[in-house]
Image (cartoon, rainbow, N blue to C red; front, side, top):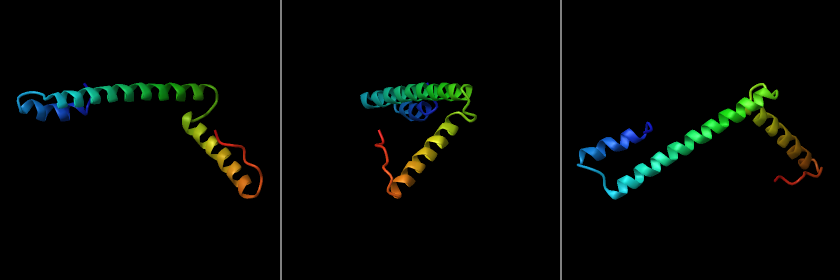
Amino acid sequence: MGRCLGIVIQPALGRGGFSMHMKKVLEKIAYLEFVNDQLSTELQYVDKLLRAVGFTDGLTTVKQAAKELFDEEKQKAAHGEDMPPFE
């Protein structure tokens, strides 16, 4: 079980068991920890791929590049140039 689960389980055990609500809360925490692990693993994989194709700092480099492009387009729009729709 995840690190947060211990915080919830200890007080519940001290009262002689779990209520149905507590069981639902524990199930939700376990699910959210699973989702967090999956997303974290996916981000690490994407970061590794980006580094492999030449983005020196992976996701950080891509975010910086995207922000620079967006800021350039925003600047053009402020000076009356057409800005393509952001999708």
